[in-house]
Length: 322
Image (cartoon, rainbow, N blue to C red; front, side, top):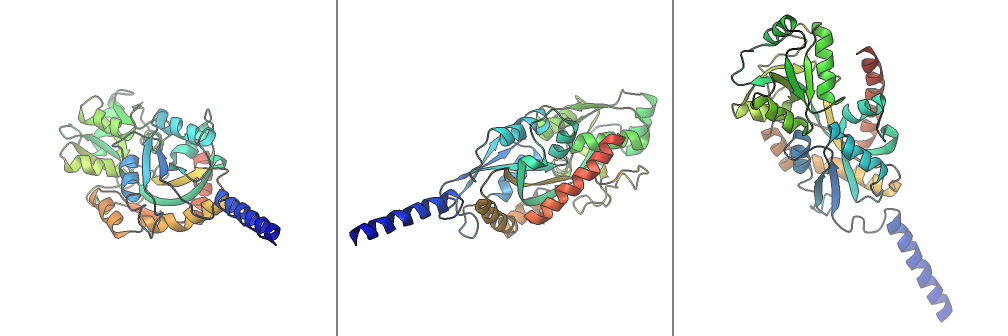
């Protein structure tokens, strides 16, 4: 009898260990890390800190999420690390930016693709905008393009890196307006690119609406156009590029969300997929995001899987054409 009890106890202990190992049990038992591939102060970092601020609540993950920045090369440094070195244990999450990481994987030279990660949920969709310094002589996209036509390659403008949403928007603008401009990727991401505009190091820039919204409210920049098919509720007086005569769609809109490395146990993925969208859909989170000019678009795991696939097909065609 004692032997049977001891054997049963050992079997139960083994089952409990297996359950915890495959994502059941008490997951998460300790704080979780969210890797952001851009520097502190940029739109992705700013928003990631807001959308995860209620993670410790009982109706969310029940443990805090710590943001860790791994910036460099337009996001490549962080996403290469997440794909090839991070532990796939549910305690290492990554913030994704689409079209950024998908466009980079299409162009090559990186260690990741959509097959390297498992999406969890999407929190926002941030259009690109064209900005100039507050004291710039440019007051419309017509002014910008007129200068670019008179000075081929002479109009300098910043963005967060190569083959990120900013760069794609820049390529679309050059093609639609039939001009050659000097796009200058900034190693410090969107925050660095915005600082370059404000400091007068470049004549203009393509940046996130959310970053530009805060910079314009501070009196540092003027926003001249939106790379989207509709005007933004945050900037109702700023026309789209299409309204200003440039055939540019919404391919550069920056979708942001959470993913995990491929190989993360499915029960953990399922738990996160059930919990994270509700964490985003929190009144405190939505209020803070709205105050910061950060457009939200909450999407489930299944919706993100579909979005990734659709964006990949669109980007393959777009980048081949550009």
